[in-house]
Length: 177
Picture 1 (spheres, rainbow, N blue to C red):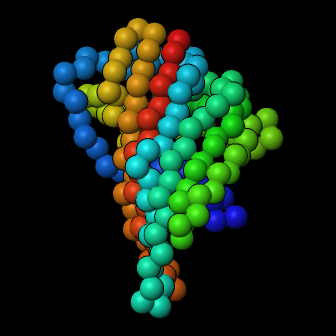
Picture 2: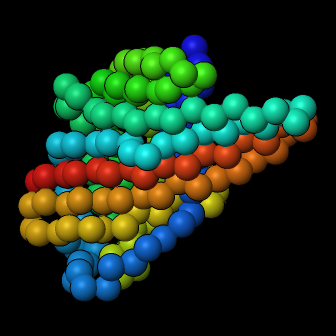
């Protein structure tokens, strides 16, 4: 159960994170992104979750990897929309209170549709915005006409009812046309 909470928090935080680290040497245009890209690899690395409540702090470290990939990122324009569809399994490994836990969750847009989101490109930074929320920022680390490697940084802290939750991680996404 703790791992499910970790994965959920990481995904929610990823969708609302807004850090950037530009690599100005890449030359990519909106037209380069258009079309269907197949997910070939997705990992979460160096993940940490800290929960502080009543003066006590609990920390978990986690990582994750996608497997059994049949998932697509579809970039369109006028308006710039990103549709995600397909399915894969995401395996999260967490260490919490000295115990390792492995959790596998299936992502399937036939069962749980993902609403299309707005996207924009500025240099080598792709910003994804859902329902006017703060954008998710993905940096293009590698690009060719048929390969795209993206990196996103998660670093969020939220406090609610005296409980502070801090989530940090790096997500890598590799796509091929």
